[in-house]
Image (cartoon, rainbow, N blue to C red):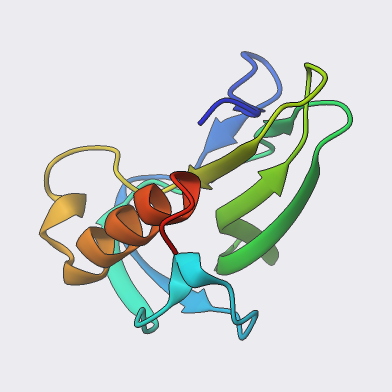
Length: 117
């Protein structure tokens, strides 16, 4: 799932707290069966995208008047013939994984990455 990177001094995160995540109506398999959710987590932002990769956001959270992508997918990237990549921003600690939507997102992501969805 390489293609998105935390770069020290560029990428940052919100405070740990309860945040609402809105699923965008993209119709992508990664968000199939996933509904808007509230999660106790940090919100990462300004995560860097590999040059040459086309990324699409499928979920977002708002923080400090910014829309922050929480679920991204992409194809292509740093190497010729690079395949699919997915970024799930939530999951700072095990508390975040108590959110039922996280299980669905992870299952969907793995299925999509393996071309099973």
